Image 1 (cartoon, rainbow, N blue to C red):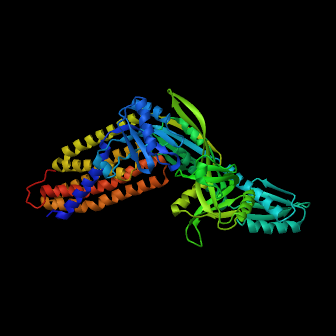
Image 2 (image 1 turned 60 degrees about the vertical axis):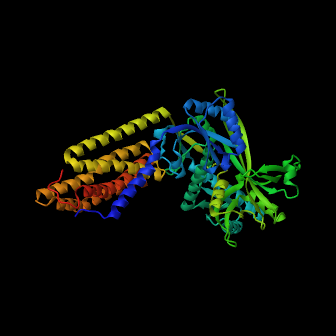
Length: 618
C-alpha cells in the first residue's frame, strides 16, 4: 500500500532533474559586455571583428572573449565595468555607421550549457536598471491625416474626370466637396463612391450651392487609429533596434500609448535621438543599361546612383525618383492570386498613383527597387565626451520586376516567404510615423537601484522560505521536512520554467514568488491535517496516508483553480507589472500542485510505503 510504480517515480525524478538543468544557468555570474549589432540585420563581418580586436588592444583594454551570436551579432566580454566603459569608447571610435554597440550583461555559462542552448531568465527594467519611456500617440492627428489624403485624392479624381467643382475642403471629421448644381453633384458622388467605397457619402445643399460630404465610419476610423498605433510601434521598434539593447520592450499600452523599456540602457539622450530620427522610402527604377561592376569600380553613370541592399550587395539605380514614402497611404501582406506567392499590397495617394502609372506603363518587365532612407544623429564617446553627428543611411530593401502597369494600388512579389512579406509591409509603413508622438513620461533607473531591488527581492524570498521551513519542520516533523524539500524543489521548478520560457522577471514577479512560497505549503497542510484526522479516528498509518492524499485532493484542486483563474484575469487585463506578478503566480501554483501532490506523495511512499509502521512522525 502507498507505493508508486517504478515508472511514476522515474517520471517525477526526470521532471525534477530537467527542472534543475534549466534552472542551472541562473546560478552563474554575468560578465559586463558590449553587444555589437548590424543596422537592420547586417552581420558583423570578420573584418569588423579584427577591427574591434585591434581597437581594444591599441586602447590597452583587456577583454575576456569575443563571441558570435545568433542574428549576426557580436558579444565582447570584459572582466569589470570599468573595462566595459573604456571598451565601448574604443569600439565606437572604430565601428562604421553600419554597426551599433550597446552595454549589456552576458551570463558566464559553461560550455555544456551553451551547447544545450540554455539561458537564464531575463531581468526586467526594475531589477536590471535602464530607461523607461511612455509615449502618447496623437490619434486625432492620424484621422486628420487620413482625411487630408482623401481630400487630395478626391480633388485629383474630379480633375481627371473633368467634373467641375468649386472647392474640396475638410469640414471637421468630413471631406466637403462643393458644386454649382445638383446634376454635377450627383455625377461626382457616383464617381467618388466608385473610387472610394470605404467612405460614407451624403449629399446636401444650402439653397445656393450643393455639397457631397464624405466621412469615415466608426469602424474605419478605429482602423485608422489602430494602423497609426501599429505603424508607430513598428517605426519605434526599428529605431530602438539601432541601440542594440538586449531584450527591449516596446508594446502598446491602452488605446493610444506606447511603452518603451530598455533594460541595461544608460543614455536617455541617445534614446530620444533614435525616437526623433526621420525616415522615408523611395521607389526607383533599376539601371539595367550599365554595369554594376563598373559602378563599384568608380565609374558611376551621371544618371544613376550606386546603392547597397540589406546584405551588402551593390545595386545600381536611376537617380530619377518615381514616388516617395510620403505618398504611401497603406501597405499590407498577402498572396498573389495568380501564383499563390507571398506579396505586399501598396496603396498610393493621387499624385503618387499618376506618377507610378506613367512610369510602369513605360517600363513593363523592368526591375524596380524600394530604397529605405533614414536620417539620424549618432553619439560617439570621444575622450569620454559625447560627440554628435548626423548620419544618412540609404539601402535597398526590395527589388522586383514590373509585371504590368499599375497606379494607385499595386503589389510587390518575388518574396521568399509570407513572413518576409509581412515584415516588408510593416517596413513600408514604418518609414515615417503615422501620427505625431509626445513623450509623456520618462524615467531612468540606475543599475545600483536595480541591484538593490534584486538583493531585497532575494532576501525576502530567503526569509519567507526559512520561516516556512522552520514552522513546517517543527509542527509536522518528518512530514514537515518532506514539505520543506518539495517547497525547495518548487522554487527550482519556478526558476526553471521562467528560464525555459525566457520570461522577464520583474520586482512584482518576485512578489509573486514570495506569495507562492507561502501558498505552496497550503496543499501539504491540508493533506497532513487530513492524515492526522484519520489517525485520531483510529485508522492505520498506511490507511491514514492514503486517505489523507485522496480526500484532500479535491479541496486542493478547487482552491488552486480559483487562484489560477485570478492569475489569468490579472494577466489578461493587467499592465506590465501586474502581468509579471500574474505570470510567476500562475507558474508557482502549477509547479506547487506537482510538487505538493505528486512529489511529496512519492517521498512519503519511499519512507513509509510497502511496510508495516507503528506510527507516523506527524
